[in-house]
Length: 303
Image (cartoon, rainbow, N blue to C red; front, side):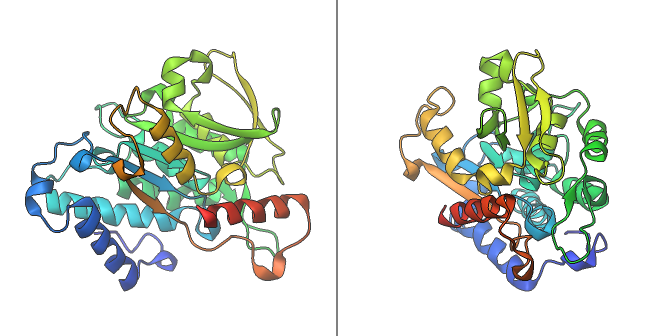
């Protein structure tokens, strides 16, 4: 079970647990068939489908709502499979994330020294709770949205990921940001990193990029591991607050990794939000950054 002492303001209510019980029984575990999960081999698609995990940007909870949900899901996976070491990454083939969701994706799918994921879901939840004030500073008076703290965040991510890069992830990973130098969305992709050195980035830089607030940092300059690719990154939520569509498109067009996936009928998608917008209704303005944020949230709602 999830440790409720972490932060009582982010308690998981009864409805959330009921929703995940339905998810576990009806989708992940084959309509209450216990044989399906017992016979499932970790790191292989469930029942022939490609399983996608998509995690939205942080909203007002800095990713803690999604982290709580994943901790509950991982605990249930361990209970139902009989494997006390089961991890989220064992049951998903692709993970996509934006903002705080991108940080969660990196924590759960980066390879650790033992060959398994660097963090369990419960450890990732604790990481966000303990470091949210180092990554995001408290909002100014009259504002709800927390501001990104690039210098402190980089130190936090350096301690967590060390020198790990996109190539060191366990499954297909997609994390979004917006590149100010090309004025286009940029997708950090494990598949691209494995194919071209110029698209391999350190995981600490990926997390900084997807979290960077354009109204404070004005973009964070990053370079690939081989120094061949330069981007000026801002918040992944501006590009794709909900990265589900990008994940589906990636799978359907990636025949090298997913040769037998021909349509959306071959997919199982779990998409997690992170609560309501972090811009309160009374605090909206007509600034360019707020208008872009509204457009991004509208696109997420459509997905």
